[in-house]
Image 1: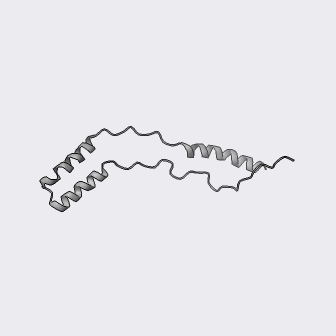
Image 2: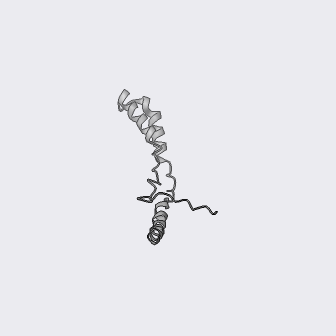
Image 3: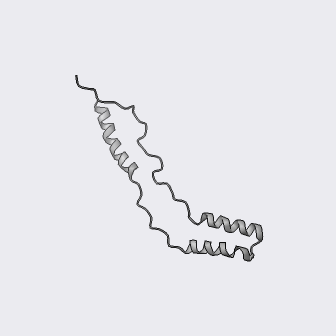
Length: 90
């Protein structure tokens, strides 16, 4: 006796939420360290010079090239048209 195909429950929306997560700024932690140093010892403090130099080197570093976006939602939307048309035929 042949097995029946497995039927999945219908989905309201065929979509993946946020496939492209934004990457955090790598200089953010260094900037918070500079701001906390300024807050604790004053703006013109010589003790913060090393942290400021680290922030400058981080900000002057070249940015990495942007990654290609994820196209999964585009392909799912194309695929959903076929699913809906097959659903109406049944």
